[in-house]
Length: 219
Image (tube, rainbow, N blue to C red; front, side, top):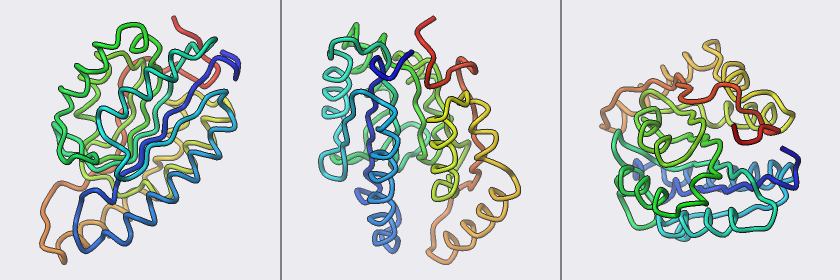
């Protein structure tokens, strides 16, 4: 699919939740994700950014409808940078059930059929793949547990993706154990010091069509 047929939605709202002591870091990461989204957006004809208080479930659905409704757009990719639990996402309004967001996306009809890649940096994103894949995404990428590698994995993945490397191969390179395992070990120490619990496991799961690349059309 040529650039003219591609649209990108970037959603970043880490500062809307998470560990209170880490909110200053989350604000920095939100800004970094927005910058990465703008850089990635050069590979797309249409782009939208939802950040912080603007990143509600209703706004996500509306943005996808708007992007998919643009003349010539055949694929909508989503870069999602928010907090998550196994069955929910933390958006501007608070905890949102993944099942509810998936249902809202399915209800859009034709826009949902143009969904292509979901690259999610949120914790437990692999658990969201069945619902969101069922809502229309051809390929979902996300962590098995608490994700601690977004800061270095994300720019590598997005750079490879923008250059035409298939998403499954790009995430295999970006999510290399040599970098991931030490990051997970540090995250466990940080969470323990903050009095938080949870299973840290940043390993990414690929769910869906492993051949999807930025130039891929609908099958």
